[in-house]
Image (cartoon, rainbow, N blue to C red; front, side, top):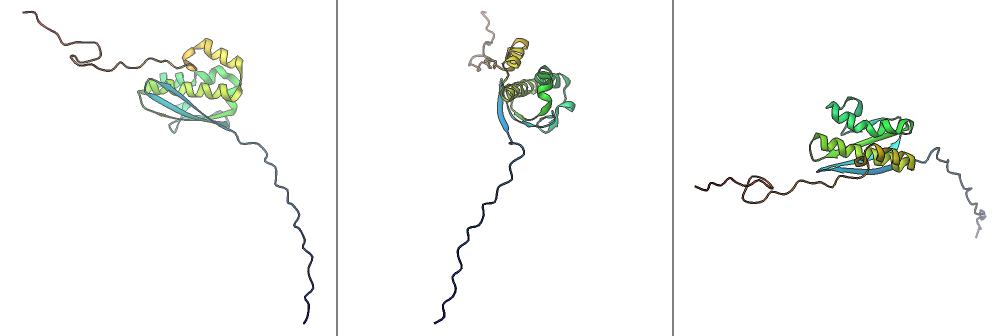
Length: 155
């Protein structure tokens, strides 16, 4: 019988994994106003803000665009290095604008962890970070709305 020469087991050398150049970090934040709910994804970028697939710079109506850009204007240079992708559902256009504004503001605060920026936003407009609890009062029977009643005649 012929014996086969045994080959010594060679352990493969550990290959070093290439180090990641930058740690990818994203943040998910939400904002609410009346019945509108906005979900924002915040990540490193070049200062773009996209609301429901539309860039903030061309968003219409103008009053809603101005409202949504307030946190970015207040943050100054801090907001220029972040991208915001906001999806808003429910409510009317102004409720959606204020919900998106709240999501953007909360995202900026959470990303920068700046108490100075937080104080600046609260002094400017508290509803940018703290929600407004007012909701529509439900309709009751005996009339067309929540408080109004049908007219009655005494004759």
